[in-house]
Length: 341
Image (cartoon, rainbow, N blue to C red):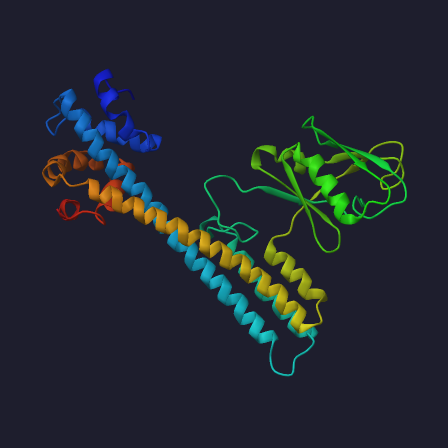
């Protein structure tokens, strides 16, 4: 749906922050008055500016509501882990019994299932989810060891699935695990893939969604017989990386020391604390944005004059108009009056 040239020049900045559905709803609402007559261009421009603020406020209010829900989920998850930690740290307990291991696994599985829904606002690594797809993460089989120190040099070549991308890694003799990890990280960085390892020297890879196929399709790996068999390339399929809670559940199956396992739980709790800090900062920014929009809505006369046009849009089934009204009801007294009647 296009505006006239004059209206477009005046109102483009007001419409820019809105999504396509809200832009269409705003333009439709100012095209004609309640009698179906075309509204003058000058009046359309002013109305678009006002209604665009309403729609923007609706979007910010929706984000704020989602942020509040994410914060509640983070706090509940933290408390669930705290309850589990206290149960395992009962007086006189130094080792985890088989029953306690099973109990921990069950509770962690239930918590993971709850947080796996998109509405939780958290990714599998207990970081806040965003509008952008979460990075793809995968691990390399222990059978391919690129980190341990070796006495011979080796050149490892990796074809990353059918993406057409390839990685070449030169691993010198005598280089320790930390140095080898740095070498591997540098090689994969050219493909926009980050690399990390755990205390068992298992490699983990992470890439943005646009590069997901580089980790999701089997790799063809060739070497010189030091780390990778010489000759024909070896086909290796990476494994999807376990979530933080799944890793904690697997650790429970083999944990026997209560104190050591309690420290692992605390690491997951720290991830939740970090996520909480980010969410609270996001909420503060959204609240400030909402206040700024509210303060700019000071022309109550014009707001009331436009309410009838919004009513028409609502009667026509515009979901965007409904969200605008519901959001603005939290911001200005004039819209509360319109919403009630």
